[in-house]
Length: 502
Image (cartoon, rainbow, N blue to C red; front, top):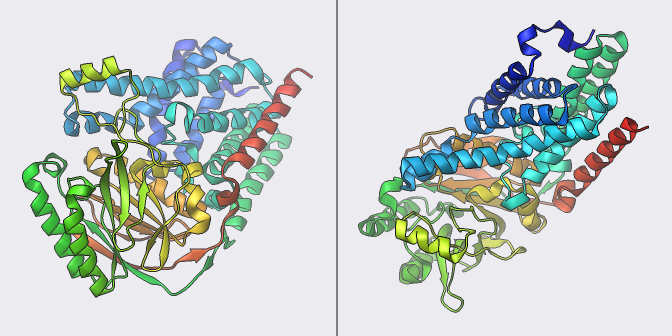
C-alpha cells in the first residue's frame, strides 16, 4: 500500500495537496537560524517529494510553486523591511517588489516540480534516491547564479551544526544539500514500500551519508601557520536612519577613531561595511592620519569604504587595508540595491520618483588578498558571502577571511541570523577563520570549522576581541568549487532518466 493510500481524502485532491505544499514550504525557514530546527528541513523535503508523486507535470509544478511561495514568503519577508523601512520605498511599491521577488524565487521550485513529473520514473528507488535529490540540488545550484543568483535558504545551510557539515570542505553547501535530499528520499522510500528491503536499504543509505559526514568532519584539510593573531571587530551601531546624514560624518569618525585607539593593542582592527558615510577621496586626509597613528601603535586597520574612480567615473563598495593601502572591490552586487539592471529610460523614471538607488561597479573577478599585520585576508562584503563558488577564489592564497557587512538594513528580523549562518559555512568550506564585522550585528569570529568562538550582541555598540589562528592549505572545495558535486548530480539525474525510459 502506497503512502498516499493511507492519507485522508482531502489531502489526496489537487487543492488539498496545493495547500499542504504551501504549509510545508512555510515551515522550511524554521530549520535555519535563528531557530535551528534542522529536522524540519528533512520533513519539508519529504512532504514535497511525496506531494509531487504520481502527478501530471502541470499539477506537480503547481504544488512545487505553492511550496516555493510558502518557503520564500516565510523565509525572505525581511526584504520588505529593507526596502520600505530603511530604503524609503512606499509601502505599496515595496510590497509589490517583495512579492515579485518571492514569486520569481518560487519559480525555481516550480522547475523542480515540473522536471520531477516530466523526466523521472513515476516511482521506485531510482526516483526517490537518484532523481528527486539530484533535481532538487541542481535547482538550488541554478538559483545560486541565474539572474545574478539568490542562494539564500539552500537546504545545506540548515545542517551547519550536524555531521553533514563534514561534506562542506569537499563539495560546499551543495554537497550538504545532497546529503539532506538523499535522506529525505530514503524516508520516502520506506513510507511508500513499507518492506524489509526498503527499511534496510534506507537505513544503510542514511547511515552511510551521515556517518560519512561524521568521518569527514574529523579531517583537518588545512594547517595552522604562524602564531595566533589578536583582533578587534568594531560594531558602531549607527542606526540606518542616521548613518548617511551629513551631520553624522564627524561623530561617526570620532566614534570609530576612539574605539580603534582603545583596541590599538590588537594586531588587526576591523571596521564594518562603509563604516564612514563618505567617499574615500573625501576621507584621505583622515585616513593618512589614522595610518600614522595605527602604525605607531603596531596595529593594522581594515575597513569598509566607498571608492570613486575619477578616471572612469565608477563607484565601488570596497574594503581598505589602511596600512598597506590594499583595496578589495565587491564583486557580487545586490540587484536593485547596489545596481539597477534597467534601461536608462527606467532609470530616469526612478530619479523622478526619488527612489533610493545607487549604481556601483563590480570589482574584478580575481583579486589578490589584502595585506594586514603580515596576514593575507580574503575579503567579502555583505551578502556576497552567500556565493561560495565565487568567494573561494582567493582562499588558497589567504590565511584569514574577512567579511564586513551592514545588516542594519535588515532591522530586527531573522535575516542577520541567516546571514551569519551562511558566513559560518563559508569558513567551514575554506578551512579558514573568519573575522565578521557589522554595523549593528551580528559581529562574530568564526573558526576554521565554522564554529562561533565569539559573538557581540546585536544593536549594541562595542568591540569584539578574540585571538584567531591563521591557516594555510586548500580544501578540495577551495580547489574545484561546485563543479565536482554538480557533475555527480548530473550523472545521478542521467541514470534516473535512463531508467525511466529503459
